[in-house]
Length: 131
Figure 1 (cartoon, rainbow, N blue to C red):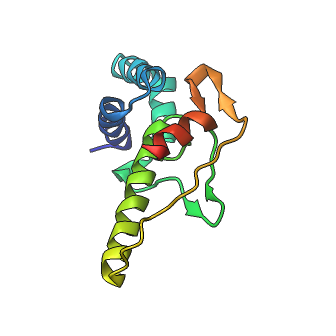
Figure 2 (cartoon, rainbow, N blue to C red):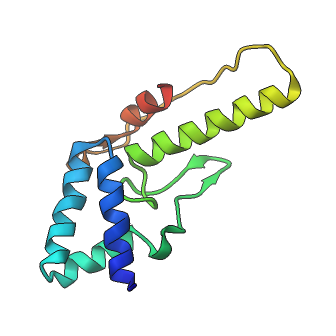
């Protein structure tokens, strides 16, 4: 397998799971161009989807930080959903280990940031996190 085929495979999987119709369509269009010999589309897919599906946006003390874009390295709806699910699972596990019976409470905020071309926004991320 080549880096290009890895990126294509990962991009196809991503586009099937992405709840955002705009970013999913963007990735599907890149896939089509790449499969039809578009070198620029292949290069963009390789940037958005690193080899071997190993790299993801980092979660640090300030939360998730990256540009709003499709793929595992960007801030987007699917990354936010996956992160919220992982964090919720971790909190439930910790609660079970401690035998704590108090309800888990979280505060979710948002600001003005948005990327209108991709239909991504901090407010939308907060709504997905709340789910």
